[in-house]
Length: 255
Image 1 (cartoon, rainbow, N blue to C red):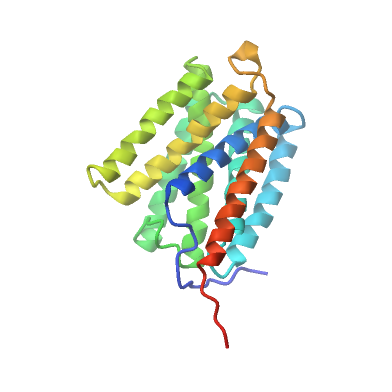
Image 2: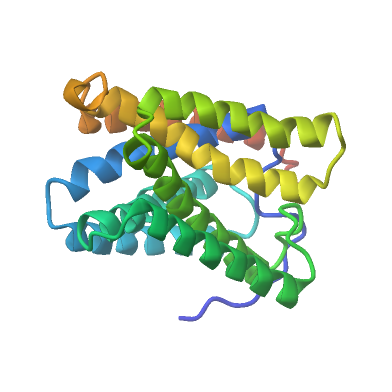
């Protein structure tokens, strides 16, 4: 059954706060660890297929929601993280495409998606996700940013041989640029948001790799599976708190 092209009274994405960015970084780290665990233990193409099916189901749940709900929204982000990361990993692991090439390809794809979104809607604002079509553009953009961020993070850690934690520190410093650009210089909020959104991916992934990868490769050797489970529990707790807070602020219409 096709998804009806609906209009919503309010944007179907959460307000951008410090908590938003904290959960976003946690999901990027969780997606990296989960992808590493499955892509290197089962057939990579099968892993992507399974993740893609789960992602489609969760995204359907989010698209069917009549308004923003923390649980469905962040469940979709988690699955975008896993699926988008796997897509980037499989391009390298299964097909041997260098990270530099895949990074350029995903960057070009993201530019194309932004152009398509802008031409169709006249805006790239994350505050304006009030129709199904804009929501579809939003999730397509988010998926590509995860794939791009994965490729860029692996490029710095492996190709440039900077290591996981050094890469994480570099991306942490880089993410201050859009933050200061918005807060201090009053630069375009939409451009600063999407710049920060892209950078959170390699930021979270670098530290997840640093925790999970073997010591011989520069990690702490905790294991990708353990890191993925720990981050999943942490995400679930934080999202549960956010969802409970959201419910307290939703007015109840009484007859």
